[in-house]
Structures are given as C-alpha cells and as structure tokens.
Length: 240
Ligand code: NDP
Image 1 (tube, rainbow, N blue to C red):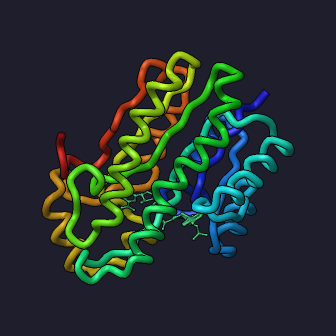
Image 2 (image 1 turned 45 degrees about the vertical axis):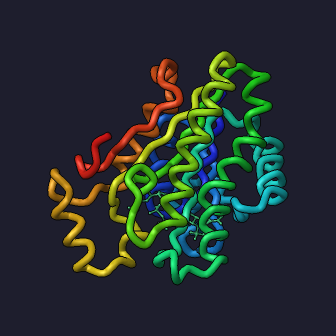
C-alpha cells in the first residue's frame, strides 16, 4: 500500500517540487494551499494528486483537513511542513499583525500539523516529519525579525519533538534552504538579489528541486538514523 504524504504549501514553489519528488518516489501525495486557486488547479491537472485548501495557521481547519485526508486516503506517514509567508520590515516600523501572521503561518502551523499527525504515527511506530525552516532562521536577516524568529523557532520545535518521538520510529528534521528561485524571491528587487548572489559561493540561487531531493531522502527508510537535524542547502552562503 502507498504511504501517504502531506505537503503544506505544496501547489507552488518549493512545496510543489517536494510534492512532485514524493509522488515520483511512490507516495500518495496530498498538497495543501491557502488561496491561489490557479496554482492549485494546475497542480491537480498536472499530478492527479489532491490539493486541499485551508489555513495552516488555523488549528481547527488543520484538524478538519487531516481528518479528511485520513478518511479519503489513510493514515499519514510523511508530513512536510513547508507553507510559509514573509511580511518584511524593520522592527521599529513593523505592525503587530505582521509579527503575528508570520509566526502563526510559519511556526504555529508546524505545531498544528505535528500535533494532529504525531499521535497516529506513534501508534503505528513510523513517521517522517520534515520542517522547512530557512537560512534566515539560522543567521538572522535585516528586515525579517518576524520571519527569522519563526524559522529559528522551527529548529527548536524540530529538536524537541525529535527527542520525544525517536523511540517510536518517527524522525523529525529541519531543512534550511538558502535563496531559492520561487514566487517568494521573485518579489525581491533585482539589486537585492544580485547582492545576495554575490554572497553565495556557488554563485547562483538554488532551485526548488534541489530542496525536494533532500526531502525525498529524509522521507525514505534509509534516513532512519537522522533525526533532530538541521540541514542547510544554501550554496555555501552560511555555514554553521
Ligand atoms: P511560495 O510563496 O512560492 O509558496 C508558498 C506556499 O505556501 C503556497 O502554496 C501557499 O499557498 C502556501 N501558504 C502560504 N500561506 C499559507 C497558509 N496560511 N495556509 C496554507 N498554505 C499557505 O513559497 P516558497 O516555495 O518560496 O517557500 C516555501 C517554504 O520555503 C516557505 O516556508 C519559505 O519560508 C521557505 N523558504 C523559502 C526560501 C526561498 O528562497 N524561496 C528560502 C528559505 C526558506 P497559495 O499558493 O494558496 O498562496
């Protein structure tokens, strides 16, 4: 029987590449999204996979969605917490809502989804949770107090949860992508991108499928001894 994988924010960008990679690996993939119907429909047509619309920041909505997935597909073995947003600005000018929205969408979402799938994974003695953090959660980034805090929070959640579930055959890992070519970075000014690329030893931005390849490995049986890890995929831009 096919293993079931949920990829939040799986209809666009990095999540889309992750969904394609996991489908190619033989998983029954369910992608989630928030509002972009066009991308979701394109994803459904292209993959034949289900795309579910809900807000990952809303616990009750996550609960409904996980119940729907379990009823329609079966128990969830792989969870990729990928959905994320940015609301950049310096702290002294940041509206409280921009702090709140980024923390809820990027970090609380990971709690929500993990809280809902971990009990079942514990019962079945198997699970793979992969959280998409960011280089900016590791090093901090000017204009991203909210985003850097949320992404650093994911690293703490990953390590703590990994210790709680390791004996139950569940691994929990975080990936910190560097700058990847997606809609999220397409919105940045070219001169800012150029200055970032000058800081990347491989001299280019990353591609979504370069993150997906890592997710594919971490989701596999082969990665059973890797847990609580923070794995950077950033072209050498930040080494810790
Ligand atoms: P995109 O903006 O291209 O896609 C974001 C995805 O998340 C979309 O599918 C979007 O849905 C979904 N999403 C956003 N908010 C919500 C929400 N409240 N509920 C449910 N789904 C939501 O992002 P990327 O592919 O660039 O980024 C993916 C992840 O990787 C994010 O966590 C990001 O922080 C992280 N990352 C990205 C980097 C980059 O350079 N691109 C670098 C480091 C980390 P919809 O399509 O409906 O809007």
